[in-house]
Image 1: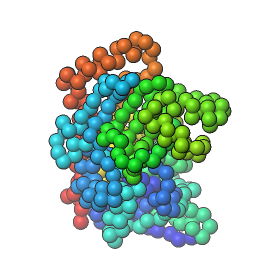
Image 2: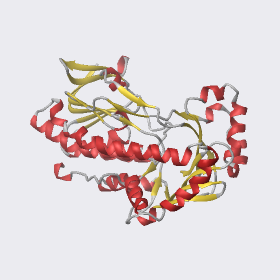
Image 3: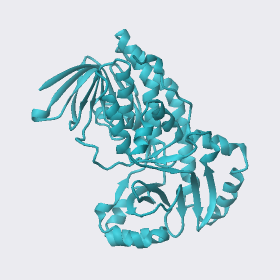
Length: 405
């Protein structure tokens, strides 16, 4: 069994974990990334970047090469009900150069992050290995064991970063409780259809016949569709059979009904997202820190997942560098991270809950009558610009390049 001695072991090679690895490696910190998947050829949920994430990736020299691999700029976030545009959040009102959303395969971002990391002498990548054990000394986390058989490795580190998502194995192995919040009315059934020639330059929530759907262009020449269904009801609906599920989806997206009928042919073409919010009760322990969905889980509304994970990485980066350089491994060395970050996450969670209720809620005739009035009034209030800024950027975050070597 190979053993690696590093300063920081990042578990999870998603956007947050890989961004943090790059930041640390450029700061001269010995960092290893342990990733369960062997390749980037896998299914991803998040595909939309907000301007805040684009700004940070651009500072790191990642965004340009990733966009060159292919992606689609999206100009607006719209709520459409029976063909009528009720809400039109126009990103062109934001300052250039990132006055748009970006639909881009997550694989493109990860490939560029890995390529940049591999240029740094202090970086080690360990793919195809799932963490099986947390190494500890007393209460302090000191590393991980990952992989199996001849592929098994031990990584000893001053700090372990859990960046392994909403169902984090590291969080579970550490015994950290997670407070799940079932505050959203809907889950989402995702699927893609081929659509040569771009159909829209927007992210749309469409309310037509049946449950609301989320729709946006997906590179290359695909449309990503998320059909919403009552939270926790998928198994009941699926028991009726695939054809019954399909019959419910078709009326909700009439413009794509023919393509869905032809291309979505089995249950394997559908991917369920169990939509919930939640917080890990601890974000920092001696030798351990949680970032991204591992620390705080969000709904897909507002496309915040990747945005928040990358911001977490940028915020915790200088704190980890200072701790490593000073030889500190106690939770107190990183206590600033949850203190400054939790209020930001609370604001995002509150906004997502309100967005979901306004756009997706099945609130009967009264809600149907009120929704257009409220949406129209919102566009003429100062609150509109504030909401747009919050969705696009959240709290301004900068890359601490002064820590680079």
